[in-house]
Length: 388
Image 1 (cartoon, helix red, strand yellow):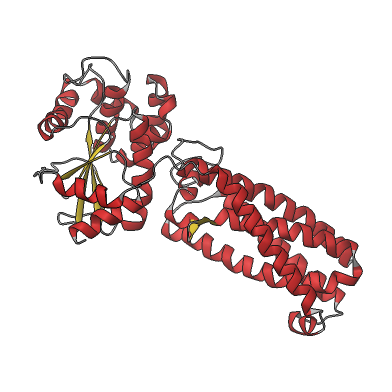
Image 2 (cartoon, rainbow, N blue to C red):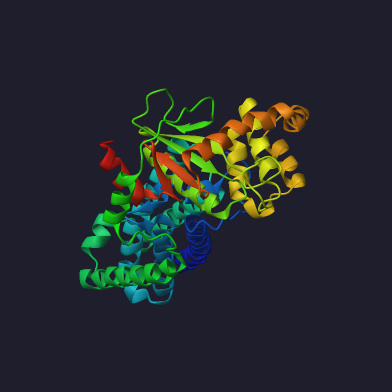
């Protein structure tokens, strides 16, 4: 019976490896700013993309999915060894039992973070967590069967500890190889070679007073945030999409300290007179839709949809997203078509010209201009400089 349980475990560990492998790939796609979508990104609540892009998806810079992948591969190998080699079965079961209990505790922790901090459901993560719990249960049953009712403590005392040490050493080596291989998926397109120069350039910028008006706000809610950041962006601008992804991660971690205020600057002459040549044909439509979404309390949902699906922005798709996020379609259509909406966007564009905007995305942090995306390294430098 023990051998059959271990063979079943091997299959489940292999399945869990496939799930965690997909999550590793998804994590790097999201953090690389590719603008990926996934079958498990169903709506604003059931969204594994948001979970994989959150600051909680890594531990000390290592994706949690990578740790899971290494563990499940190790569990698969150990289960096969235990199923075939009766002389090593006790040590295999003791090693697997200890690791599987830790895995279940880790699963409970990540599930709690996902549900109660991120307020999301990650279907693939939960699949992995269920598999983790199932393999733990089967391993403990197999250990009890093999040891004639003895628990983990007695089984460990009767085990060859040198052999267990070898297994754990092999597990660490497997993790190192797994991390080394999967980290090749990281696309470090956003290095900061000279932090001191970055801070010096920031200091040299003129401090400008910017009125937030009634523009959409994310992060800190209130009139006196420790740090206010203005974002001037175009929904069809790829660099803006990458910047929005970075800012999304920062807001999750520093939302109690920073307030992000969005200002539209579509690179589209149909509504922006400062643009001479058509660059992004649906940028004005996207900006108007976002403005109208704010009036219905759906700005964040449309903001996310537009930036996450930049390559698919068309009038038909925008209309579909309006329905998907739960907006009143008739009200939205009337709002987008209204001359008052275009007039309402004009102050953002005029403000951008007054501030000397030259490209998108452009941020104003503490009143000083920062061109391009802001990641955590840059934000920490700016916060330290501003005493936040």
